[in-house]
Length: 115
Image (cartoon, rainbow, N blue to C red; front, side):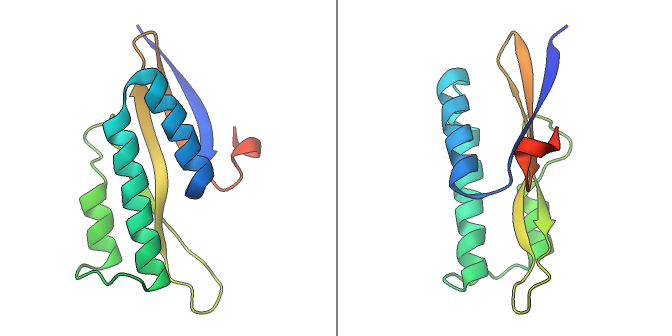
């Protein structure tokens, strides 16, 4: 049986992209790492008003997340209480199987204090 190790990672931005890039290099999971990065960049562009989506935030969230497959990335909504800042889709979790161990990446706002 393969051990699962939970690892806290940032929910969005360059720090998350750096973690995913390193893990993709080590595990060969470049497709899923690229998918997460592209999804979050698209959502950032929507939040900033650079791109307009025909779908609502909940429909996009349902399209991105597949809860039946643990090897697929999951996303959640980050609620911002500041005026004029909408909900934003952010990274929630992903399980990468390296063969010897499984890494469960868990998105957190302050990953160094989370786990």
